[in-house]
Image (cartoon, rainbow over all chains, first blue to last red; front, side, top):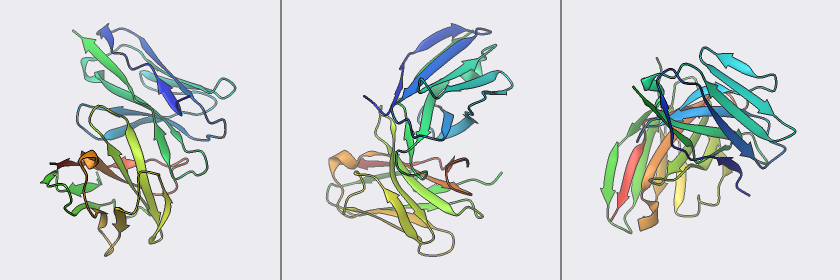
Length: 111
Length: 115
C-alpha cells in the first residue's frame, strides 16, 4: 500500500463548481496533515493544514478522519486560478521532520 | 514576504561530475530540508538539517549526497558523482520549527539535468 494515495485525476470542472479530493494514508501514527498546491513546474505551496476538527479557509474546507486514515479537500465556487495539482501530505512514520507527499490530484477549471 | 532562494535555477552536467546546489533559507528559520521531484513523479524527501547536523535522511540520500551549511545563510546540497537518474527538480525548504505543526516554505527549485 502506498504511504499516501490520491486519485490522480484530472478533474475537469466548470467555473463555479464544487469539487472534492480524497486522500488515504497508511501510517496510523502520522500526526500532521496538509494540503499543498503545485502549479506546473513550480514549487509546492502550503494550501492549508488539516486538523481533526476540520477547518475552513474561504472556499476551501479540509477534513480528517483518523479512524479511516482519510483526508479530504473541498473547493467551492471553483475559479480558473484554482487549476493546479493538489498534493496530500502527511508527516513521516518515525519523525516529524519528514513529509510524505502523495502523487497529487490534477484539477482543471474551465471557463 | 521572506522567501527561500535557490541557485542555479537550471544546471546541465555530464554523468560523473560533481554538482552543488545552493539555497538561502528564510533568515529566522532553524530547520532546513532538501526534497526532489523527478519529472512526472511525486515530491520525495531527501534530508533534513537542524543545529548543523542531519536530523533525518531518506534511502535516496546515499553516500553520493552531502549537505552543508558553510556560513550563516547558505545551505548546500552536493552530489559527488552524478548519475542519469539524479536528473530531477531539487527543492530546498525551511521551517521555523519542526514540520508538525509548522509550515514548510519551498524555494522555486533547481532543475538538474544529467547527460
